[in-house]
Image (cartoon, rainbow, N blue to C red; front, side, top):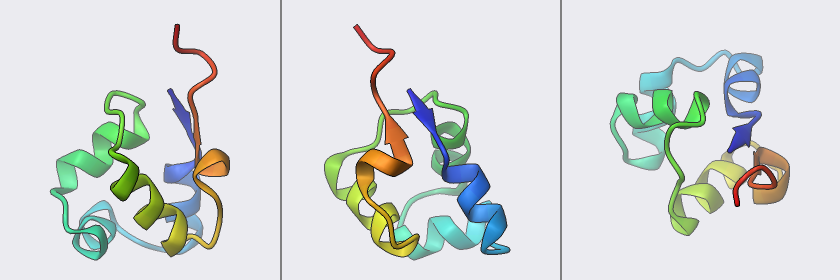
Length: 66
């Protein structure tokens, strides 16, 4: 999985912990998402997309998974 989450978070000047609080997850979850080590639930993906005013498809790319 590829994601633009880290770039978007840094553009907004947010810490991982601040973003985690906004979507009610642990900071470690945000770190794993940013590294592509965790596949978000639909709810989490939609919440993150809403925060960054974008689409889930723009925030996460699942094309590499088989």
